[in-house]
Length: 438
Image: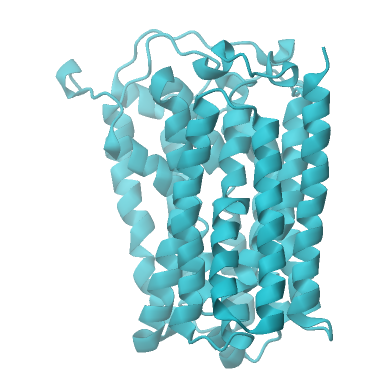
């Protein structure tokens, strides 16, 4: 490929990054949006339906925790292809009329497809996108989860009215294939930066950068020096092998992973059962129930971009996490109140609070992570933080399903969600105090 074919990072690459984050979750959001029909058709309980999310996020958590360092050794193109092929295969399996266990298998595959997006997309940002654009792009690409939620929550119920929920999954399966073709083109036409940097410059220059976010440990500071590569070589390039002994991540990585775990319980307990709550408890139609998740997705996209901009301006990650936890707690209270009163405006307000806060946490976690981890270790460090989130994502629907199927029902479920956000508030205060120490 000649030099005139090279392109500066643009909308094509950004779309691919967003799509990589969006591809895996689309299956679960689609099933959640049509959960009332699936439960009735398969004759399963609410707790059994929650096993789909638990399987999906459990597989993602294990994949993030165990495959991150393997991902450090593979090329961007191979990892992105893996994501999109698995996402497509998972959706195709949903269309196979072979009972609940086929859905479990599909959910597991979609979870594995979510094991690599954060690590490989963060690495692409560090190696191919100028520092002036990086954190802004983090907010956009992390909003891929909410874009997925928006598309699936609208498309699945509408398609299900005509061709059933299995037909909806079959139709949507074409999306990952389109993204795969776009990835091949984008990575081969976007070159590596001549002198890749390990950190986001906004963090280095910001007076609000906390001591805990300041400098990575010595084992993470090794950088791969590169000459300017052609785009085709860059797309297929495998990163330099990491040391045989596992690198020790800074304490902030583990703290961010813990916050992601606790917040994740509340996030997916809400995401998975919100449409069912709207249909069963508030009397919404299947399409209107899916619209609650779609609204959360729309607001979540805006919120993630907004919170990323705050991080780009030097805002403290710990302080933003506190704000997000407090807003999420208010949302849980509104869900409880909506169910108790049956007043639908409270439900829509609760959905908005959920989208603004809980769905914005991941972008703050990833932006904070990019302040302390170099490109050579980004896939594995991102994997640890993402594993924390996914372990929470796996626990949340399981616990919520058991509670919803119990005499306590949804009211007790919303109390569980609120409790997780109280814990997030407490952890955020601890992070602020630790960060303020001289």
